[in-house]
Image (cartoon, rainbow, N blue to C red; front, side):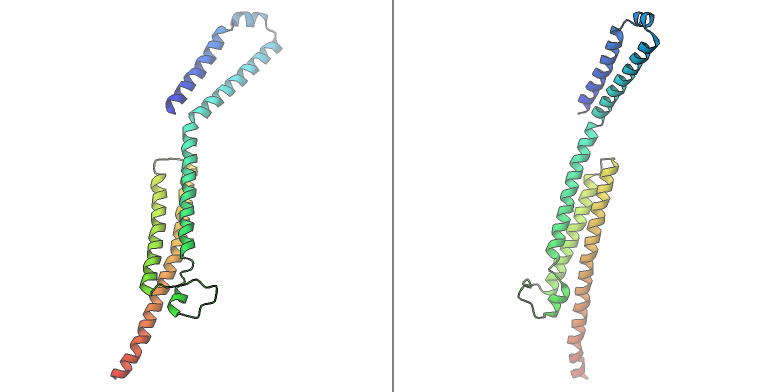
Amino acid sequence: MRILAGLALILGIAAQIYVGWLIDWRSVVRHANAVGLAEGLESTVNLLLLAFGAIWFVLTLEQRLKRRRALREFYEFRSFAHVIDMHQLTKDPTVVLSRGTPTPSSPERRMSEFELSRYLDYCAEMLALISKLAALYAGRLQDREVVSAVNEVEELTSNLGRKIWQKIMIVSRLDESQAERDAAPALRTEA
C-alpha cells in the first residue's frame, strides 16, 4: 500500500511537471490578455488543488483501511461483552441462595453458591480479557477514533464487570449470613 501511494505521488507530480513543460509560457505571456491569464491561473490552481487532494487521499488510504478494520474488530469485542452479560443475567444470587418458589416462567437454576460464585468470577475475567485484547489490538495504531473505540470497550467491560462483582459480593454476604444462622443453633445447644 505504501509503495502504491509513493508511486501515485511520484506519477502525480511528474504529470504536473510534464504538463507545465509542454506549455509554451513565452507565447502565453505575449498573447494573453489580463482576463485570459486570470482564467488560466485559476484553472491551474484548481488542477493543482485537485491533484494534491488526490495525493492526500492516496497517502492516507492505508491509515483509513486500518482504522476501518480495527473499528470492525471493536464492534466484535463489544458484542462478546454483551453476550457475556446476557448469559449471566439469569444468575441472580438472591434467588439462587434463597431457594424461593419459582414461577412457571422462571429459568431452571441448578448452581450451588460456590458454582455461582465461580461462574460470575469467570464472567468478570472474560470481560477483563476482552478489554485487554482491545487495548492490545489497537496498540500500534495512533488514531484518535481507534483510541476512542478502545476506551469505549474498556468502559463497557468495566461497567459490566462491576455489575458482576456486585453479584459476587451478594453471594458472599448471603453465604456468610447463612453460615451465621447455621452456627447460631449449634452455639445455643453447646451453652
